[in-house]
Image (cartoon, rainbow, N blue to C red; front, side, top):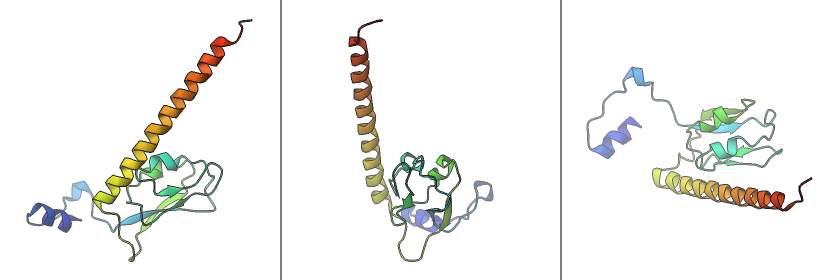
Length: 133
């Protein structure tokens, strides 16, 4: 990663400052099937929609789409998500692919929020029309 950044910026490669951590191999999220309770809390946490599943069903990670950001780890209440080294075959998604998937994620989240607001507004109006007792 450091070499790629140095090449991109046209600068000499410098070692990573140890106070900033250490460079690790690329990782990908994996959901342990026996521990997943299907709560779906990891779904909105993934900024690139690399996790598939539905409420009360086992979830899975699309390894090809996972960028290894680890945001799903904190969202999981049963700690069934672990980070594993990325397999040699598929590499991590590049920046344009991540950006496109993130924009899709953000658009879906915004649409869901609008639909929820409309539904709550309709329910509120319907409740106001009910006769007072």
